[in-house]
Image 1 (cartoon, rainbow, N blue to C red):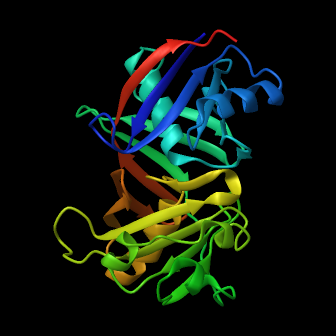
Image 2 (cartoon, rainbow, N blue to C red):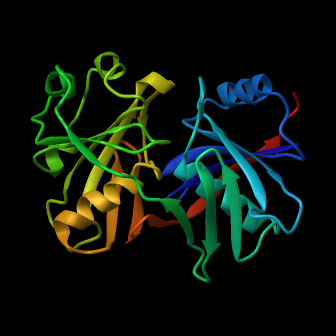
Image 3 (tube, rainbow, N blue to C red):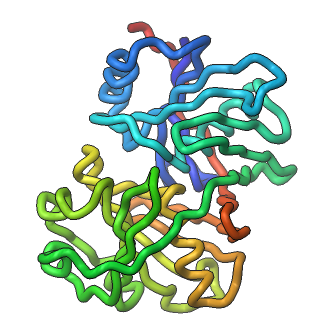
Length: 269
């Protein structure tokens, strides 16, 4: 079977967020899927297989980090849709069924892909004890995110605070169900992006995830409420970065980006 490494939320190799993609005829046992994800050793590896025609979805989709299966992943969904479209396995809109429900990805003529994800609810909560110290930054506010995400969204004072983070990852690992989303408004709004973010998931074996689609289902309503616009662009990442265009549609959020395949080969095991 073929395995591909796709850089998501970028149009250039070696940037954005890399994901493994494996297309199957059916899902084998979970142990094998987890072993492959551990071998690939990227933040996410996506596994998908086609479904019979006429149903609510076209493909079944699952995502694994090197140590665990997750309920929702944006960049690996984008990577999977990219593979399906570039290999001729799908055209137009492709629908996926996953742990978090039905998701879709629609290809545009310019090569971008727009995904339809559930919008995350946000709940203001007190900052966990030690959060500011673990981040090494002042914390302005903290919000819980919805089911299937389980992150803490943490607002920092400014873009430079986000960019310069060097957190205590061991301390962060126990502070949320999945991980920590840090964010701030762009220093120069109106240029290429409106807000910045960085995401840390040490509890899932991911120190930092370069560009996290699922996090933008929370970042979109958070920043739309503050900036007064439903269409925004987020820049995420530290060493590797990528852009995510978001469109808030009430209970659904559209995430738009590009992807490029950088490695393709045979999975022999």
